[in-house]
Amino acid sequence: MKNLPPQSPGSRVIALGEHQPSRVVTNDDLARTVDTTDEWIQSRVGVAERRIAGPEESVVDMAVAAGGKALAASGLTPHDIDLVIVATCTPLDQIPNTAASVAHRLGIEAPGAFDINAACAGFCYALSVASDAIRGGSAGRVLVVGSEKLSDWVDWTDRSTCVIFADGAGAAIVGPDESPGIGPVVWGSAGDKAETIHLRDHAYLYQEGQAVFRWAITELYPVALAALERAGVAPEEVTAFVPHQANLRIVEGIARKLGAPQALIARDIVTAGNTSSASIPLALARMSGRGDLPPGSTVLTLGFGAGMTYAAQVLELP
Image (cartoon, rainbow, N blue to C red):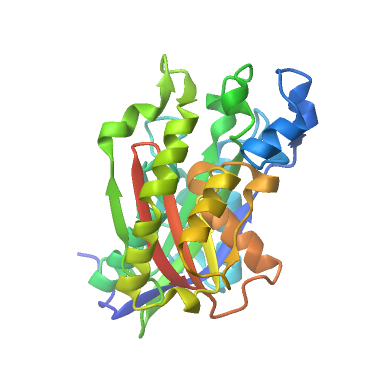
């Protein structure tokens, strides 16, 4: 039996990485093919532009790119990673899973590898599983990736969805630590609302936008506050609030209810669109790369989406 790493009292994010496709699609570009305008899109969802992957770039490709950057930033080698978790709801195939292919292409030999589909809450779910695996002694260091190619599942004639969704990937390396750098997760689901976001005719994403908006605005800020309480962090101690980038009005509406006016609010959706499980790690990596989040920043994350699933946790960034 392979020797397992020792249990650890805590875990933390060691490094971050991100990847976006090179193709930028603006609101004016979309207005040429559907009945919409830049003003209409920005006033309702807050997106000014998004990145769309070409046919040659897959979910696996983007996950490898983001994961490779996180691995390089960590100073670790592929040999140091013994578990790979990919959060995605848009896998290239149902079989094989995405994580094993990502691990192989990054040169990570024989790790545990599995995917998580909790839609837009997927990264928070995966990060919590990685943290528990480290603290329980099932893993030493974990690569966690959120990667989505939502453009393959969008009806580009439907202005209610094609203006929102986009492609990209974000990644984190998680390792052991003497003190907790990843707080307890507060998660749950509302399966009675599962039909508000689903695949129509097993082909295209469909969502009841107003129903999702009302649910997110009214039901989710208590989840975020509960994550702060479980981590022993007061709202005024939060450096940044990085929720899933679903809709700018949702992001700002939840932020107003947290009682943390000093916290920097992630608004990555403006230039990245809604990238589902990739949106939180993508925003974290971009904000950190710009210097918005100095080392040691206390960040509150909140993922939510189809299912309906949700999860919140507090992180201390490297």
